Amino acid sequence: MSQTITLYVDGACRGNPGLGGWGAYIITEQAEHKLHGGEAQTTNNRMELTAAIEGILFCPTDAKLIIWTDSNYVKQGITEWIHGWKKKNWKDVKNPDLWQKLDATCQGREIEWNWIKGHAGHAGNEMADQLANLGADQVQKTLNSPSNAAPTLDAPQQDKKKAESDWLLDDPFGFDLIEDELEMENTTPDSNLESNDQKHSIIEDDESTQAATGDTVNNGPETETNSENVTSNENIVDATSTMHPHIVVTPATMQLHGPRQLILDTETTGFYYQDGDRIIEVGALEMINRKLTGSSIHIYIQPEKLVGESENIHGISDEFLKDKPKFAEIADVLYQYLKGAEIIAHNATFDMNFLDMEFSRAGLGNLSEVCTVTDSLLMAKSKHPGQKNSLDALVRRYEIPARDRTFHGALLDAEILADVYLAMTGGQVAFDMDTLSASEEQQRQSDRLSIDIDLAVILPSDDELAAHENWVKQFEEKHGKPCFFAK
Image (cartoon, rainbow, N blue to C red; front, side):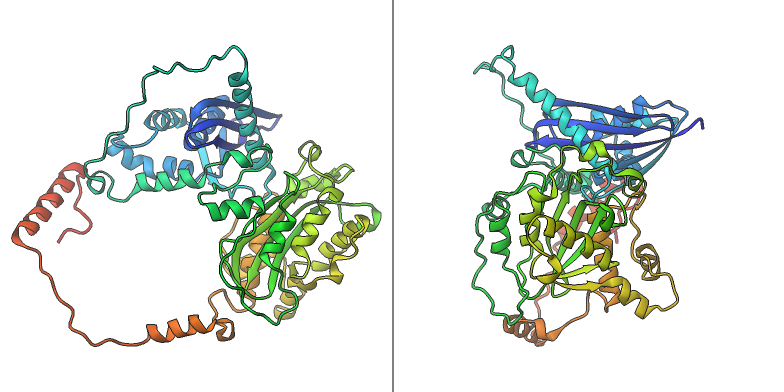
């Protein structure tokens, strides 16, 4: 192999189907290359596939390629599902033209496929996302130009997709259904694409839309609590309703009551806040009663100075940060999200010193005065004296699934720390009976009641048995192997 090349590929779609773009960020041993493009009417999955195809075609055929994508659809499709699709001659496979092109493009190449969690603070993935949105922006400009006339009213309507006759026979493991689910998960809504730096989950119902736009969501009567550091989700949503477009606040998907814990991490330009080093990234996950609520905050920040050699640690460049907000612009929103909670951080003194300095500079005072702080590093040293207690070491010790940490990222490290903290303090599944509401406890008691009744047994008829045997026979003839639930 002449060289090893790393590719980050991503797609974006404004509506699904709708206007879309693709991006490929390619890092060779000599230089970096940024490719992008788009289509006026496409889907998110098609853009994800196109990004991979274009990125691979750009590279020499004798190079080893290491590809990172945040689409499970692409990664699992090319490494696992494609073998079954070929056996059934691509029958009922969505996007067969692009899958066949990707398959042909990969032939004769050495390629390592990897999945990376989107928006976890990885600079390569974020750059690919920016390129994908840039591709969509350029298509939008072309569509908005005066030379593009509106379509005529008598344009032929697109043919409707024919109904599948027997989805179980044609797709026994539900791969096509998985494609549909992943396509919905990877969809980017119009309202969240004002910024080219972040992609958000699709918002499908009125209640979620209210939460995302800052309107109060009423999820039922409030539960009384004696904890002083419980912050209402409504207050957080109100505080972020007019926030900066580069601030990503994800609303909670679970409405829990109890003290808020925030698993937090920061990335900085250096180690010494006293010498002028600044915060460039903040990520935090909300946890209540040892359960992650789904709520999080993630912000990139313009530090007003060069990142210097710290880029080797976090991979965040000056170019990437040049259009990001300064800390003073996001201080109010971040302060409202964090205040009153218990902050859990690894080497918390480091993070809190920087946050206190930044908030004081913004005129809000020290964050440590309105939060309690738990240092998971001190907990680990007490629990495992004389051993390595870095985050990576704890991940190995507690056998937590590894994630790519080529570069550190605030939200990625917060996710890892959440797993470590729960494992270090007793495991996520431990029950605390005091936290159960009366209704939950009553439900648990009722679930234990045994009901002594004779259940009716309905046997299949002769016609039904014959139909089943015929179906199994068809399956074996079509796929060349026995049906997994045959008698």
